[in-house]
Length: 232
Image (cartoon, rainbow, N blue to C red; front, side, top):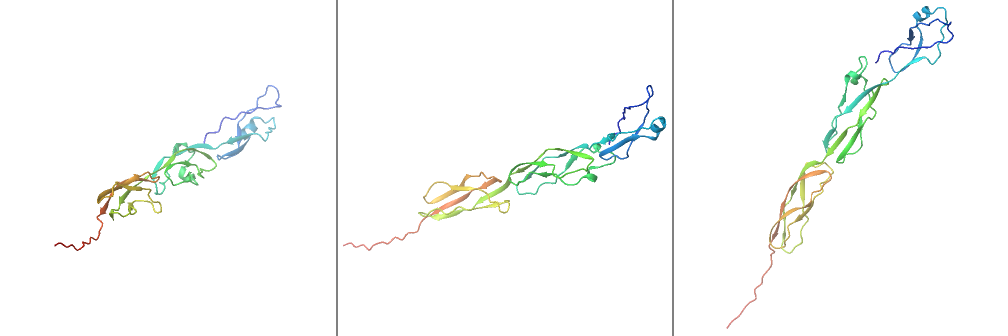
């Protein structure tokens, strides 16, 4: 996209005291590549006493232009789809009438994984063609814990029996990924009502809002037989 530089040259074999005048010309083209330099018609006319011979190393090299491309860091909640990648760039860096959308092929990617944590965006196969070199600014996708609710189901037992397994239900969990909740209850074996709470809510995927349940110990039915009694 830049203007051609001023070409310089040296000569061998000219008559002492005489100067060889330009200008030089080159093969047409503005894409990345090598373009041969040669004597223009004016140069040939200005130096008609000489047969100008160029070596095969006389060329103009057009190199790819750097384009800075950045992806804004994003966050999503565990279990959701990745947000759409939005590319940020300076449109004025492009040459001629080239545009990012016109030239772009492929896409950036990110490190594999769906667990809670941070994942780095990578260039992937994103390309702007041979004329541009993508300078990719690294950014992150953060997967955050998902908010869920845990409701403990109230239950009961008869005095003297073993405790049943405590159960709970959840809302807003991801299909196939259960919440890790360890339940316990207040101590006691006498008839009464005890609160069912938790030992731990440390779950790798979820932020847990917890609603306790109640555990009732009810009286045990027993049979009482009264023996006949006598008196005189």
